[in-house]
Image 1 (cartoon, rainbow over the protein chains, first blue to last red):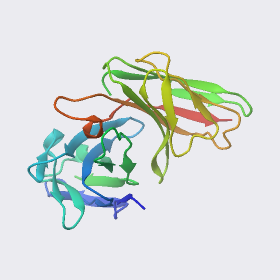
Image 2: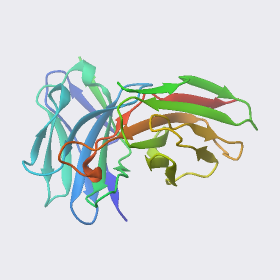
Image 3: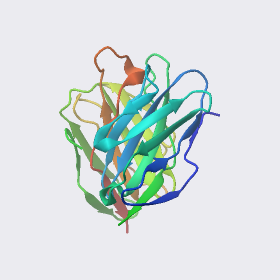
Image 4: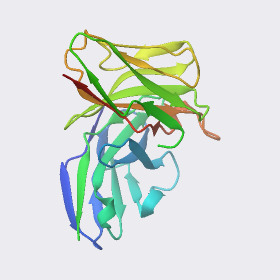
Length: 115
Length: 118
């Protein structure tokens, strides 16, 4: 079965420290990978995506993610966390298949940045 | 959230009533989606539409219905057949991006509607 795993329900990090939110996937073929952020009672905001090319993708708000095909991972990173980064983060995968638009979602990771 | 509006923000329904959630987009996107979000369960796809006058069931379509009569609008009706409708409902849209094909599209989300059954 095709799936996305976010192995940590919650991540805690001190302000100013680097942060990592993990995502691994299990899909057949070559995937397209996405990260979204959700603040309380709000819709999801797109952060970044990997389609092809450079494995390191840079996105909004200073976030970046590295695609690792051998480890089937797409971890989200930021060099220096802000308290305002505290939110729920979702990883999603889409199969590279023509007109396919359906996303497979992880269950989310709650990030808490402590001042 | 820009370009996609959902209304109302909060909706209360009595058991046995149908309710309709509105989703409008001005991004000229071909595809639109409805998701349901419950705590700890992530996002689950209810229905999606890739073109006007066409839509497909997602993973949890039972008890819901949709229509896509206009490109910019994709209303969701939560019927009385939906056993546990209390949830946060999210609408999204996506469109063909330069040089890409549909599977590379980014989905953009509205602000959501929180439905509570009394």
